Image 1 (tube, rainbow, N blue to C red):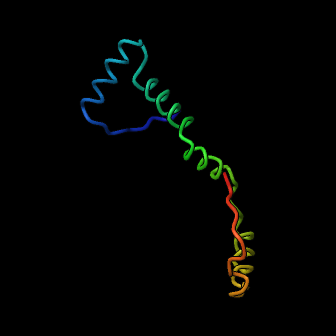
Image 2 (image 1 turned 120 degrees about the horizontal axis):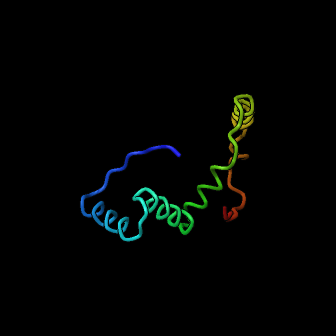
Length: 87
């Protein structure tokens, strides 16, 4: 694990301190659990996570893609039909 700094208002910090004492857990542990729960319940985040799992292309692949895209005509770029894609 890596140490990070966060900024929050005093009332929120005091609430965390009270919960920490009552549950006999560190504030860091409570925050990790809260963030994990948020990320698991947030459908939009799950889409971002799946997209982030797609490996980046190499420089060579990027150049090949750019060459192909530059060769497209206006007709190639015209929208023929659309699909909805759920990530």
